Image 1 (cartoon, rainbow, N blue to C red):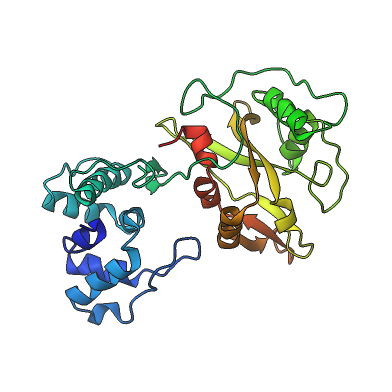
Image 2: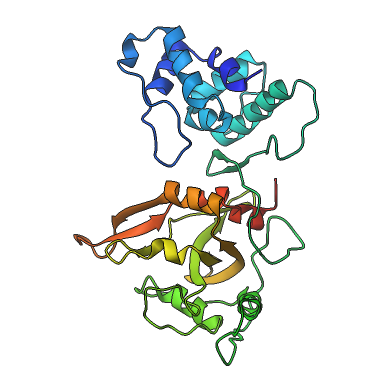
Length: 314
């Protein structure tokens, strides 16, 4: 049984029309666009459109539903309708997964359990690159430690990762008005020399990027901003993503920040597909600027496995 097809029959006609009318986002899996003249659609037509759009994406359908719509479906399934929207989405996903399993035991990769981040269901892709081990999941905020940057630039990727290990827990200091200050300080901790060139930071081979993360009340980590990759006019974004050392950076007390972990991700067919989906341009610079930068949407880090290196594989 397909859970989206089943749930679509449980929503009201008004809810089905609203869902069918939602515009498509370039950052989600391909699916049907909004239905034309939704107010004129019959219940069957609207529900069929909902199924066409989200048939293989139960998380996407539940994330698109309002809390009232979630409560309505939970009631028809005789499920607890109390709690926040994120809790209801998790409850309904579990019910839908149950229906699709039909009592069978499935490997975790066939039906990965989503986590709730920002009230929405997020499927964490399996890690695709190297990352440091952890004794607990989700990772804890690391204890503060003194910086120990290498005296010389690392001679190999292995040495670069040793330096990244030593950077975990180092406080970066207050950023001030310079938005790039924390990234520059992190690169210094790794012993990487700033060359001011468009090629990747470490010897033209590894790009070093910080990505801002924060912990939710549940203890799970989420990415809070889309990191900038390159200026649109300069190009070079794809070159910088061929091998990237992502440093997860979290705010701590007194406007300070620290490195929580690292993730070395190398380009392959999957990363290429995700980059094409999630790279986007927008203004970069002071208000009124006509400069544009290329940014990587935060969903990239769920699909590409970095979130799983912070929260544990679900």
